[in-house]
Image 1 (cartoon, rainbow, N blue to C red):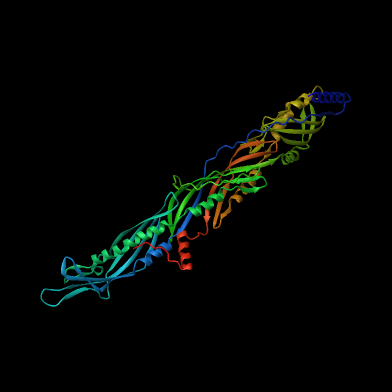
Image 2 (cartoon, one colour; image 1 turned 30 degrees about the vertical axis):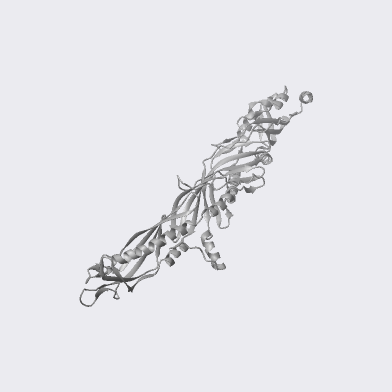
Length: 496
């Protein structure tokens, strides 16, 4: 403190002597005192929603159903006596077409056409056995329709509830009914009952096979990949910070079922050392309350003081300002951080006075002019103390107001670089066959933080984000079946 007082005294004496000699007044004020930085805080943003369509191929399970349900059943040689009339016997044979699959929303419709023939025999008390039927070239037909509702439960397993929706004649014409006129017996109902019995056994097997498909393994891989920090550049990191997952809806495409999963995240850019890896457990799957993708992220543009000083000097160096009837010419401007969210602006000048003075203030963003300013810029205590009689005219408001109005910086390019950097970083491969696809639009500045090392300009960005799943590995139950075929093992099958 005593040394500072001596400095003030000698500087004052030098100013007075210089004035007496009618030479330009010289002043060299000490730099402002540096204090600790304020704690960093970021305004909360809405949660981001990332769309992730997860597709699973149902073709193997549907193929299993097609191979398990016989293409032919019954035989005209297999005469069955009617329990209600021991003198009457019936026989039928049928063949079906391959199953055709149609998918819409979360419903799988499986259909086939059954062509059949039937014959009946009657043995009277006296006389030979008589018969009749529909076993010619033009056979009656049935339409079989199965409905399977696909779901994904909270434990990330596929589920299916398959039922027989309809088994009925293909048309309402006599051509598609088999009536043994002689015996007044309709064989159609017998064929329908036999087809229903054969299908019912296999539908339970189909539902069990689909239930063995586990979605969790694939989702867990990209969930954990998104939890790891992404390096943007030296000392700048992006953390996606996944929070929750929910099922929006189930769609279908060709023979695939697609679960549209929405991932909730809070993306954030952090400067400094690499954040610790986060390995959150994949939460249970819930039902989504909203639909669509919405990305919200905080962009951080880092403005170093050396670059800011060079830009201010380039624009204002050589400018002259009339202060108290005198003229000074700005030579250089030096911007530096002094802690507590404040900056110091060192003004070097020549003219009717020469030297350097310091002004301090808190930087803010002018939303109208879209520039970074220091609206409360004013002389530092140390500079004001040394501007004593003879040079106190420098304390006039003209120089201060000039700097308040002119010492501003554009940060648009800075934020655009931050946007492009973040967008490039978020468009990346998370794991094999899974890419994060993102578009980001530059948003409004939400804050400026001046630390002792740099200035951070933060903006709220919006955009869209989704997962592009380009290649789906086979379901676990299908991999098991393939391994069994290679090793010669017999896969376990449900008893019919």
